[in-house]
Amino acid sequence: MKVSHLLRSIQYAVLTVVGWVLTPIIRLIFSLVYRSSSKCVTPIEDPLCLLPATELARKIRTREVTSEAVVRAYIERARLVNRDCNFIVADRFQEALQEARNVDTILDGHVIAEKFSEQNAPFLGVPTSIKEAFALKGMPQTSGLVMMRDYRASEDAPVVGRLRQAGLIPTMVTNVSELCMWYESANRLNGRSCNPYNTSRIVGGSSGGEGCAIASGAAVVGVGSDIGGSIRMPSFFNGIFGHKPSNGLVPSGGQFPLPTGRDMELLTTGPMCRYATDLLPLLKVMSGPEAKLAKLDQKVDVMKIRFFTMFDDGGSLLVSHVEPEIQESQRKVSTEQSNHADRYIRLISTQATEQSKIM
Ligand SMILES: *[C@@H]1O[C@H](CO)[C@@H](O)[C@H](O)[C@H]1NC(C)=O
Ligand SMILES: CC(=O)N[C@H]1CO[C@H](CO)[C@@H](O)[C@@H]1O
Image (cartoon, rainbow, N blue to C red):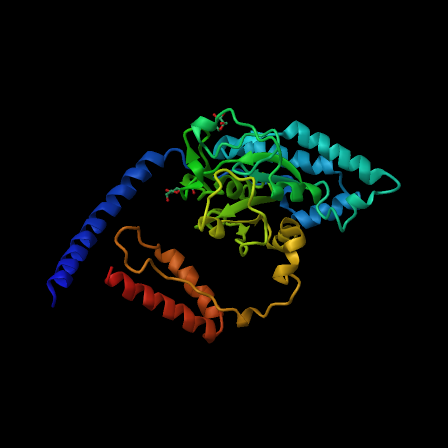
């Protein structure tokens, strides 16, 4: 055995022991610190806050319900849960209610302009939240940076413009991690956002305010952006649906911070939703004329899709281990897939383990 291999093995053994000893201590400290503040938000009472955005849009268009009633229901819920979860950076509740009343006037009219047709404005009168890193005219766009405290966006980011054109009404901008760099949503300017299912837990990041707002029923849909998990992690942490689309589908401009060079290829903007049924219609709106690039209307055979997943971190000593509960859920999904998918899952898992042994 080469000396370098021997040294690595010793290093590995020492770090493993340190990890074993430190993890329970760290867990104990955090559980004591956050014990008293743990809480689950109160259940949603208003039935309007329990409907998909597409269903709300249909009800508003057919005048079963007014846009004002829908927007008001979400505003009330947002006010209530924000006390426990702190996801709102700034709201525009009064403007949103006025815009909702305008929608009601339009839909009550005899002739509805082409601009507001079901085709052109499929979400007319439905509220949405917006990740604070995106420019929403007149609203802060700080990404949690103290230096940006007084900055207000002078125009809408392109994706926000598309959402508005589709009839969505922004009610608030929601919290992110500082400069959207971390996988929680806490910063010196707007504080920490807390998970609605257990306020002692984090919401994920960087689109964590969106994840929290949507999970708690304070919003039904929202917009996130993702380089290394910023849509996917908060969606997972809060139990909602999110999608990181391929690059080039949804415009990512009008965000702060906006990466440069190759990082820009990794940054994509996408939908976050309380109901899976809203993902596709929302992605279509967000991608506008580019929607045709992705064959969004083509039927997909789920059994022919290759799934890649890892059951653990490959034994890396620099991160915490994956909880057995999470591994068990992954296993459940993998056994429900065809053997074909299962083969790939195993392959990836083994490769990762092999790689980490020789790190
Ligand atoms: C939140 O999580 C902590 C740590 O697991 C647990 O002790 C507590 O009971 C949970 N609180 C709620 C409201 O579920
Ligand atoms: C609890 C907390 O820190 N809330 C803050 C959320 O962000 C707004 C806007 O920056 C602050 O005014 C609140 O104090």
